[in-house]
Image (cartoon, rainbow, N blue to C red):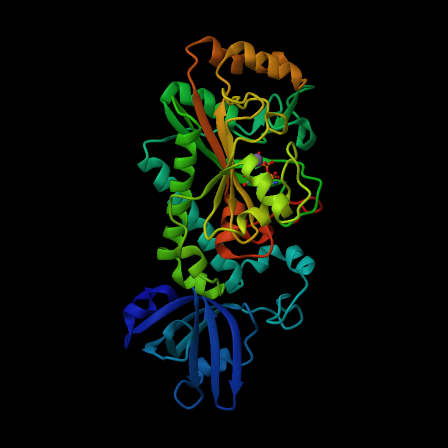
Length: 433
Ligand code: ATP
Ligand code: MN
């Protein structure tokens, strides 16, 4: 008897197979049972009759939700069943029966989100959450495939760091060995700048940490970033790499995770158009667009969620905004030679109000300018000596960016909040479970 997954059922039409999973739900109708099984790859409806399969019927009757089961039966095409196939159950082995006195806490009804977040270790079993996590995995796979294909080498950055790189307000301090202090990384960027000078084109992909104290739909305190960095590269190179990367990720999910997008009822026509090149406007043009729409933004302001939504809603694919005022950007941004008050940086804003998914640009390569900026930002120069070495020894123009994985996946999935797209979200008031 072949052991198969629900995802593979279509290849076994008319054959007797074994599925290993859990009882997701069951409808009982006299001498017929209609169980629904899940196995992590999908859900499948079954049919079991008392007359034909009395032993299997007895095993299933009254079986509690989420009990673990191994089921044998014949796969057959059934138009009305989810996935297009059902299983005619002939044998059932119950591995662990969930007790009636302590039933599975998540019923098949609407629950409040706080309750579900407290049950996150179980909530991820629900078909919608599992679909989201499969899409996340595909997005990661596709992103790495793209970066590797472009000749970028994976060089991961450390998580314990000696200093801040994105401003001190969101730093997590940890006690390191003895009395030494360290900080959880806010970005791997400074380190990929070093590996870029060693290997040319590199990227890091890992968790980053920011003590975000505001409660929004798009901020986690622990999130994953993909950070490419390239020697001898400029702003234009990175805008092009970013749009290629995002197009490839979206198109791969559309192609390889069709069922999951369907399960989420995602309007995929809104994703199908996501192909490079993306529209590009300057910060100054963005301010003009905002003012025309009645938004009070003026030159020098940073954009919040509202501004990003107004800007991106004019397009059917992500929007690139470039050349922000240097004053509102990080210390390492290279100034525009034509307008030194502007930084050679860019943000990529996702459509449908999902906000910034990429931030990046060209880095300062001049030693003196970088030292000046460190001082202006009151950053501890001693901690940055190694970073300054990159400008002492063979400095070259270089550029990179950070793509926020969860922002990107939330947009692709169309979820209301970013917390659903990471297995165990960490937020302002949540570190459990
Ligand atoms: P924002 O202004 O939207 O908070 P940022 O400009 O501080 O973001 P960057 O430092 O540019 O963010 O980080 C690069 C990318 O990482 C962002 O474009 C975004 O996709 C993602 N990101 C940043 N902060 C968070 C967070 N707290 N939770 C999830 N993703 C984040
Ligand atoms: Mn940014």
